[in-house]
Image: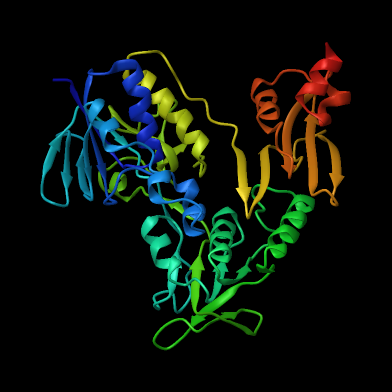
Length: 403
């Protein structure tokens, strides 16, 4: 019997951790995975496609039940972890069951931020975070839906709803869509692309309250006026699921604080994914979670490995349009230079940011084929001087010209 290892959370980070650990140390641990949702781990990135009925649940499931069994994993889904005792090395479930552990991993993900406005509890107000949300939102097809939030989640929800037949209006507090991933020109192109799909977009607006007697009827705006709605989807951000760690006495800031070994303030207890905070950062993207899972799997297997942080990269298909951004794409670094190629007619925009002879940021809209290569250049920190003249035209041309 292996050393007892408990993973709290049955999402994408947990699935990748088990996969990486099985490659390196199969049988070394007796792994138990605890999931609150009553189903196998699935790909949250595809929730919009599920809402749009482009895929079914079977297609977004990460691993079949047999895969987990073959790796000796005990899956307990549909169960909530209610308390962790770091001293007694014990986890208590909501059912009353107690599990002893030698090592424990928090992979509890995040939860949607709720708006602090009146009417949030009215029937017909939803968040967009899991399969149950998708099932509830799907009932609004053919109706008037207001999506509050023009970031990635909001636009994904809007796209899925529009494809399913809803009449959608997106409200966004900021002056451009997806301001965390796109600069102003790329965001303008995205707005046009979203509107071309029949989705109305209103920027620089704030919801004052959600109106209705028995259920949602409209969204009232701070600057006056209201937008009629049969349903409202709130997608204004996420917050780390860290309450269980906090009540266990672990150090928690915005997320569960971890060091370069992905260990919390308690020895042998780790955190990865959206619930973890490393060097002051909580990453809300899948790729850093996968990188953390690999590093932690290596450490649990007895290898020497440490996590120095991730260069976040958003490689996304938003409302049917491919976008990519990474690094300092807003050129805030001293001495940064921008190289821009823009062809709105073809729906293509590229911006590369260079400083001290190195690529430090990129935004791509429409044609993102070279995104992974640009990310590789940023992560390596290698000089791009020999490639500079042709860098904008992609890997094939630039490397051939520099040869």
